Amino acid sequence: MEYVNAVLLGIIEGVTEFLPISSTGHLIIAEQWLGRRSDMFNIVIQAGAILAVTIIYWNRLLSLVLGWRDPKNRRYAAKLIVAFLITAVLGLIVKKLGFQLPESAAPVAWALIIGGIWMIFAEWAAAKRPPYTSITWYVAILVGIAQVVAGVFPGLSRSGTTIFIAMLAGTGSRVAATEFAFLVGIPTMYAASGYELMKTIKDGSAANENWVSLGIAFAVSTVVAFVAVKWLLSYIQSNRFTAFAVYRIIIGVVLLGLVASGYLPQQGEDANAAPVATEMRPALAK
Image 1: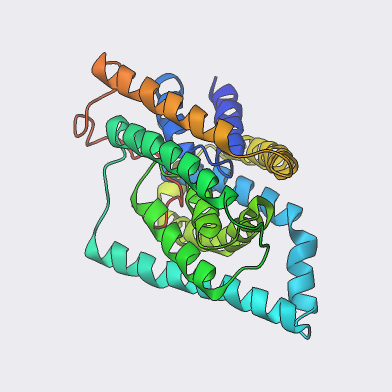
Image 2 (image 1 turned 90 degrees about the vertical axis):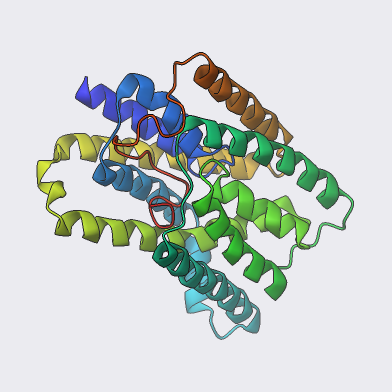
């Protein structure tokens, strides 16, 4: 069952990490049947999802590095760097201040619902603008801030928050906004995972892990995330994000119903349990 659970959690992570539906909300539901996982396990399955996106955008990343002589590439790369640095600096400040919200079901459910409503509004507002594909400095700055906000508020979804901030800030093209959000997420999430991995190794908890289970979860997360992101990039060519927004609202209502029925613990009832992974896992929320 340990390996079956690893496969199932790898699938959940792979599907939900980069789709704008919040991996946190789904992991909270999954843990009721599959049990909670260690920080190391969460880091590993997230790393699989990041690797998948890196592979998908490998040619784009190479073109930015090797084509640095092109002013257009330099400007785009500089905006990615600025967005990442804003996230890194603000994330460290938030961490030093010790500010974090609970990762229990009720707050995450409300974040899912509010995020779903926000997505519908953002689609409506973006549809009234010309489909510009350019990423401005204003968009880059807001995307950097949005990553921090998504890390602080479990359930918002890093990908969803950054995509729709970019769209509302002037990038009317869903495709262009998604590409920038995913590209800036690559270094952000690698840095977050690397930081937590070093911390986990340093405190010695990694020695107790089942490495076969970790390997299975990593491989499954990588493959599933690759398929999910490829599908998403094709889907948004001609479709809005409205279906994801409606799905988020439904999942949020389901979570609230489970809390009200006593099936999921109320906020603070399970304070000693290991925390569930969050959107920029685990950079900002831990």
